[in-house]
Length: 239
Image (tube, rainbow, N blue to C red):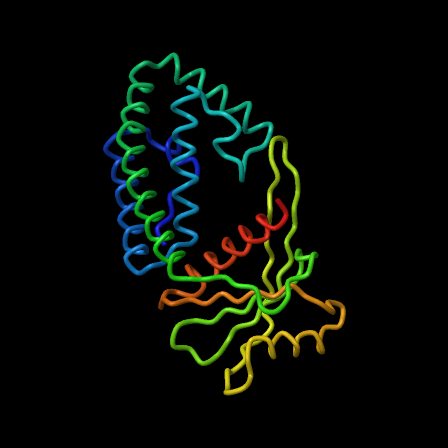
């Protein structure tokens, strides 16, 4: 995929036409991915760029939040110096504002398209517990059944909850175990019982079935939607 660097706004030559070309080429690539129902990492990337530009435009400075994956204290000092020079250069600031005014609505439109695709895929999947759900559900199994597929993919999951400055964050780790071919008489409950026998450290595991009534890219779309659906389910149980 044609990527847009995290610091694309200030990287290299700051020129409206050049930045416009970079953005439109990137958005064209994102649209092609969405047309093929590929959501990730493209949707998350759009969220970053959109929020990044809003932050810069609303706060009026290049803050640490703008480059969270790479920035160091030395980088931050340099960015502040760069910004101070930019403020003194009114034509340059006008160019940056023009670039952001052009870019923000187009990023928003692409982001809305991605969200619409996500909501469509989400509407085509259902998440239901298999058997009796235990009180402890931070570890367990996820069974993924795709439309028209005779095999069920089995994952072991672990939910980690950590607290930030203002809110709790949840991270879900999925470990693929195996694909099991469905056959008459071998239900999802039987699959759960087989897992209990093989992994006695989870004697009464929380187990969920994600039934997908849609054909879509597995890694780029179905699994990310499955993870978010499971996180929402587990968060609801913990509330």
